[in-house]
Length: 364
Image 1 (cartoon, rainbow, N blue to C red):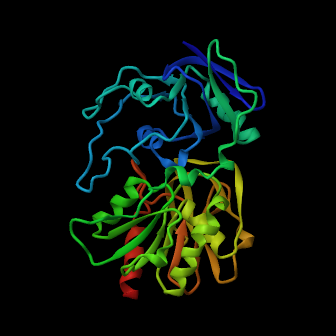
Image 2: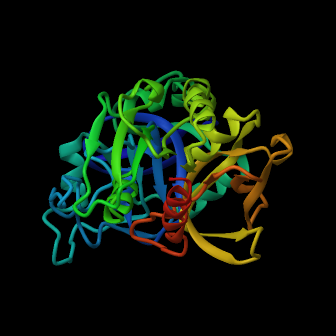
């Protein structure tokens, strides 16, 4: 079946419709990664978005089975469901080849109810998005009538849609004696896995949990990644930051967690023109001068000039100079905008998990 991606400015891109033969709408964004499409499609940070892959061939290694690891987490996916609303590719590979693959990307998306539009000039589409900025759009099957107006997913509380609904304790196999409260605003499985592999006991909390009411000792607070505008949840989660600081707990944030931490201390955030989504974003540690290659998926950033005097910029993006991490000058509080747990990679910054645990041990 034929289909069309219709952007909010009237631009159209036509192609062949695979996966679910249905309409879909959302914010159209692009990812420049060459691999990891299965992780991207299950990343909660993409909630409400139509995902464009700039790499020309997608689907060549198929989709892995729904296996779980020793912690009960999906082994090959970042969550237990898909979060994107549609997929746009240049060329879909219907034939796949990988030792762990169990089905094609097209068949998998059909089961998930998600359309995929193939045969699109994704380089041209990306140029439109880079010039104009991310836009609302809709995938329209041939013969269907487009929506008159596409609702903006960022005006809703996307975090509430992807967060867990009950407090859950996840036990490591080899405990190291550290317990953290992890605020789940769309936490990726590989973040949980990185903590568990280091022996950390995790109290996984819904986004609106008041950690002061948790009836056991917590050694530190972690703020996770997630979708949407940080201001939609910043005030609620910021109360936990305030409580943790009163208790002199170490605090670590990743992605949305970096934005929420910054909001909680009085800084401001703003929406990027087209965001950072890919696996090769260069960043610089301002304290050491060292450059690292990072995986990223965000559409908002922290305003440098709005940070309070007791906080400093820790990492910056070497492409556009935006804030990629902040830290307190004296307290054990820090966060990064990129993903140190990146799966399938790069792994340049996984040491940050160890740094966080070392800070916790020093405070215990």
